[in-house]
Length: 102
Image 1 (tube, helix red, strand yellow):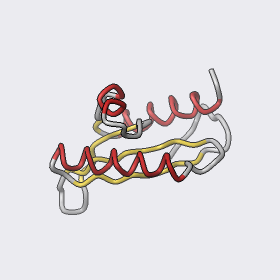
Image 2 (cartoon, helix red, strand yellow):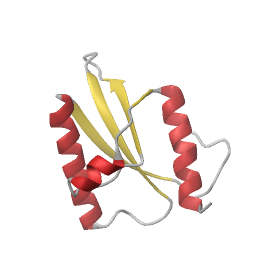
Image 3 (tube, one colour):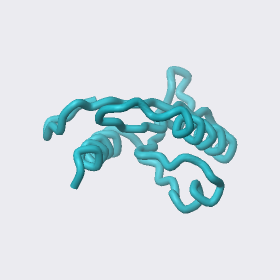
Image 4 (cartoon, one colour):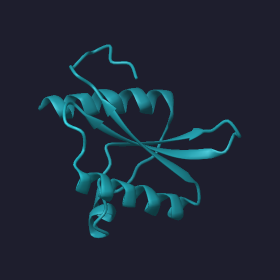
């Protein structure tokens, strides 16, 4: 397993343990030429309204411009589909750590 895959698995475990997970089909996203996402979960904002959080995990390089454009289109699509705000975050992790905490 590559470092990026391990980091994504650790981050996924954390967010899905602490938040309400959201499953998004990569097949549907690909069929619409949208960016595939690493992690998605639901969280309540300060107004107690549900918000979809989309997390892209990275171990080194910031996402390319084209990847960010695809991810932004994904964010927009899911926001319209679910009729709720969606927030895209990029999380950087420098090393694999079993105690990884975001």
